[in-house]
Image (cartoon, rainbow, N blue to C red):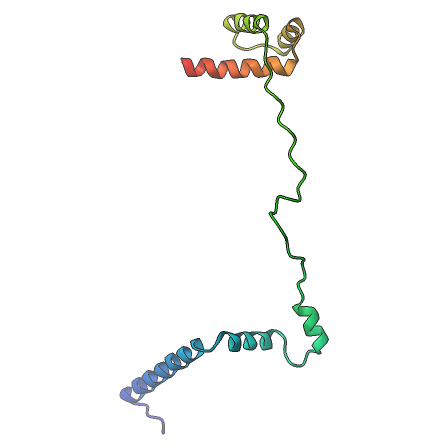
Length: 136
């Protein structure tokens, strides 16, 4: 018989919450295999044919073996550091003290005079400006 008094409602709520707590603790004590069986039965209902279940259980993607970067092409070897001769360095320094930045035509001419590439002169000036800023 249902009681609609405040005490009746509160006692019903208390009994209900106690039964929920009890059922949750019972569920948490189930063994791992039972919960796995339960999980599999929800994922693969018994109505599915057995061979379909086996197909679904197989890995869809092959397992990766080894380090993920092993299959990549090896990186290119780093270019060795270019060493300039004294005459080149003296001319680069002399030019730098007169002019901190070179126009592309000036850079091209200087590279040609010093038997260097345009990018070598450009890089040397960039590095020299960095060194100059650190010193000031």
